[in-house]
Amino acid sequence: MSVSDIDLIHAWKQVLTLSRLEAGQTVTVLTGADTHPQTLRCAIAASSEMGARVNRLDLPPVNAEKSLSRDSLAYLGTTPLTGNPAAIAALKASDLVLDLMTLLFSPEQHEILQTGTKILLAVEPPEVLCRLVPTEGDRARVQAASKLIEAAGQMHITSAAGTDLRCRLGSFPAICEYGFVDQPGRWDHWPSGFVLTWPDEGESNGRVVLDRGDILLPMKDYVTEPIELVIEKGYVTRISGGLQADILKEYMASYEDPEAYAVSHIGWGLQPRAHWSMLAHYNKETHIGMDARAFEGNFLWSMGPNNEAGGSRTTACHIDIPMRHCSVALDGKPTVINGVVQDEEGLARAAKRSKQGKDIA
Ligand SMILES: O=c1ccc(O)c[nH]1
Image (cartoon, rainbow, N blue to C red; front, side, top):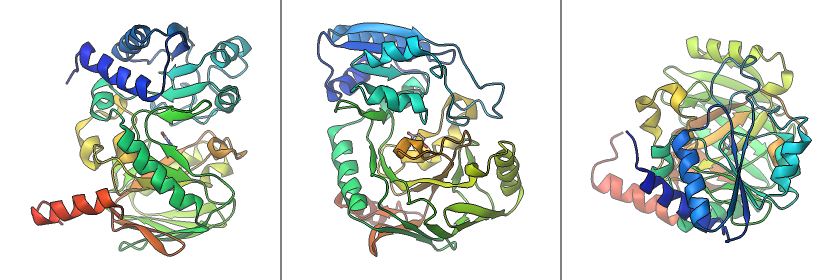
């Protein structure tokens, strides 16, 4: 279902205002072969109306012939910026880059951010961008959660299905994703609404049991039968289950990279306007699954790179796994219990749902 240019321009103006765009600043819209034309048209209209000097930098696609997926978050690392000093220079000279192409997890992205340039990724379909337009409330909620992570030495994740994973924390910062870039040098992703960090290298141990309804990305599949992953010293050492486990194993093996099995970011979803059920309604190739990453109360963990947090692992294989019905504790203090975020908003929503009998088990 489409949204009007007016609605998308208003959404862009909300995001750009929250991102503190000022008249006279330089905005460079980074585009590629898969950029959505309406997202591009409305990004330029909104930035121009706010008085920015708007450029567009269109880069040729790379990696497609290497990837088994058309999802722009599946095959990471090299981007059209790799070995492209002219393009990098243009982005470093910009105050704000609107990434409609996907630079995520690229070494060049860090180089550009370090100059103070802000980068906002926005590649979901226009109607998803409008439905999940960020708010200051999203920022406040995610930042509050990040403070809990910053103060903790261990994250312990459990579930009735059998997950029992302990991750030592401390080497890496908490990363807030709330959908706009309000500080120089900040990267964010619209849409989002979750908090994450990386465990200390080699310090994740235990097992994760994916249960019916947990999600595999970039496959965009709901798990239908349990998949068990054993994690030892920061790496997944065994994956067992049914057909979906075989598909996951074969896909990861195709990268021929042992680093693909490293535990990457861990955290939880805080976006009540994102929905677990969304993947059931969309063709896999029309979105990148941000509803799955952001839905309130998920436990989102991943395998693969850690360069996003300042680590040195830039493996091209990136698997994101949002899970339902998990409990997340920081130094023994629960932040999520059985998929319910233990902050004021989360508890109020859970109480309302159960009172209305909406909380169908
Ligand atoms: O916004 C994102 C998207 C993918 C990911 O793995 C982390 N954050």
